[in-house]
Length: 115
Image (cartoon, rainbow, N blue to C red):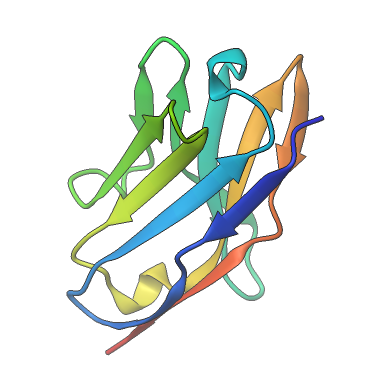
């Protein structure tokens, strides 16, 4: 199982930017799929973006053009750069890793966007 630690959440005004980081406990070369999900109060957890070890990425429609997922192999860290943030982006953001067909989750980091 992979241990994941997220950081970078916070309070930002609409139109602002945040960068979330997810540090993994093992080399992310070994992790096929890593991604970010989010969950707003009273709602289900939704996919935001994923990246594969082959460099492929996929984004939810609401994230396209505003969010960018990337991997830093030297730091075993996956980032989510979020630009042009909107109040509806307010949620707890979770990092996910699928390793050996098992899912691991971070503890989550709160993102709050004020209008």
